Image (cartoon, rainbow, N blue to C red; front, side, top):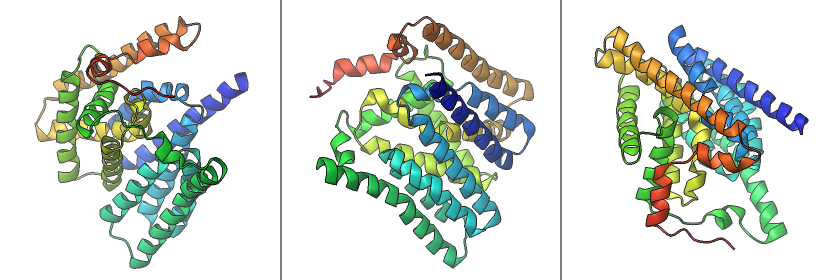
Length: 320
């Protein structure tokens, strides 16, 4: 048991180190980098990601490594880095089917964000093919051995796209807003900040790779709006792009201060509020988790009025 947790901590440390290396090349000053690292370290989504499925953190580690190699390619234009990115991408799609929904947007974002030599577009295409082959092998195995397409078998419709959007915005908002900001305000403010952030990130100067990653995250999240799924598991899918959202937040916060000429002292007061909320949330979660003899308190940590209302409004199908 201890060896499993040791493996978990090693993977978590590697994820943080990889994203530190990614952020150090993207963010313009040390304050932005410090903000990103602090928010990463305090992210409940990342700290508790192993509770969802044992392989969840492995998936995020492989995705982070893929992004690191792609970033090296974006800066050097050396195709070797893209070929190296195929290795973790291939393993990631064997680990989880959902990997196809983020690898495809990543390659698409690279194509639209960077002006590449013509032959490099063919390299990107082949890298995508080799990466997706992991997805194909996994599902062929299930079709042959179990006579079912694993991915389609797990897609159980719960809500409409509009309701899925509300759930998604709510889960993203929990990263930044106190749980006291209940639905529908959590959804409203999250949608507003995402809209403003998208405008600022894509219309102002800044690190091109942050724009690439942000576009990747947006496309990935939009997919989960139209694909049916269990609303109680939506935070699993948000966890995958949590580092990207935090990186974009670090960039967005400073761009917003410049765009709207927010006074320096107010700027840092707002920022301190976000960080203090993250600290308070983790202290509260640690108290709930530490007092549990089993996993029953985990529901309290992620308890949210939005889900309670949703369950009263819409009857969820029962599983066999």
